[in-house]
Length: 73
Image (cartoon, rainbow, N blue to C red):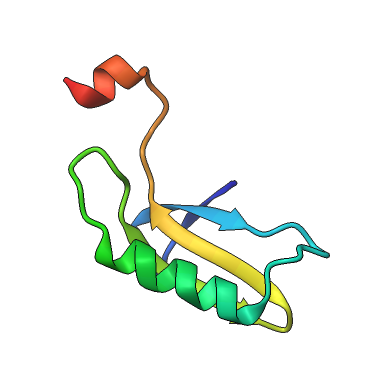
């Protein structure tokens, strides 16, 4: 997982699939569709994705380090 900053200045977390991952395009699309429908206060939101030249990346809202207790309080 990487930290990044969008051109808007929003900080995001980028989850990149390992090269050689067995997950194909159909499975990646299914994961995106599922994540885009799930909304809960204790889950980070999906901001976007990248599927280009064999790269598979999911872009999430960034949550700074802290304990689970801090996040849930």
